[in-house]
Amino acid sequence: MSDKSEKASKPKKGKGMLVKAVAGVVLVAAGGGGTFALVQSGVIGGGHAEPKEDNTPKLVRKGEEDPFAPKTEAKEGEGPAEVEGDGGSEYRTSYFSFTEDFTSNLKNSSALVQISLACSTRRDGRVLMWLKKHELAIRSEVLVVLADTPEEDAFTPEGKQRLEKRLTAAINKVLT
Image 1 (cartoon, rainbow, N blue to C red):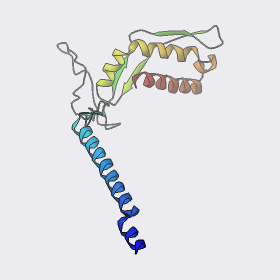
Image 2: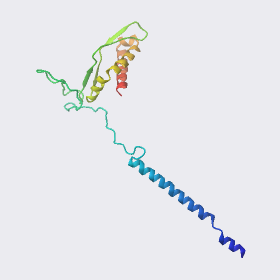
Image 3: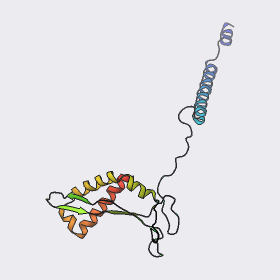
Image 4: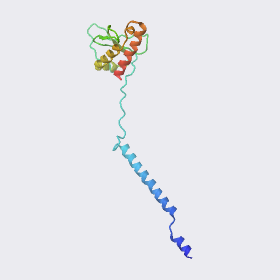
């Protein structure tokens, strides 16, 4: 009989482990839920920030008003600053001319090159504003490209096309 009383007085080990496991899961879930609630409310981790404004320039169709167009004062008797026709692209093209010429030496040569440079865009007026704002940085990049240009590229049609692509990439690098 003593064997039966010993078995009845000992608690089962499996039941105690199950209670501890359930308690652990409940604590982890409560902690995770609390952390999630604090993050969502913005108390910790930044929460939900306001969505950022899309600041990328948009294409402007001919005839549409550009909300970012640079303000120009037309003199009496002059027509509009930009003339748009029906042909070509459906998007308006705007131009920016750099105020001064670019003068640079050429790579591995004693020759100099002097160029006038203008940019065109079919995007809204922000691009023109950014070109003006960052003109000094753009000038610097353009001079680097010119100084790295072999003399042959400055005088052949194929070389000029390569130079045009390199200059476009340098200007876009500054603007982005």
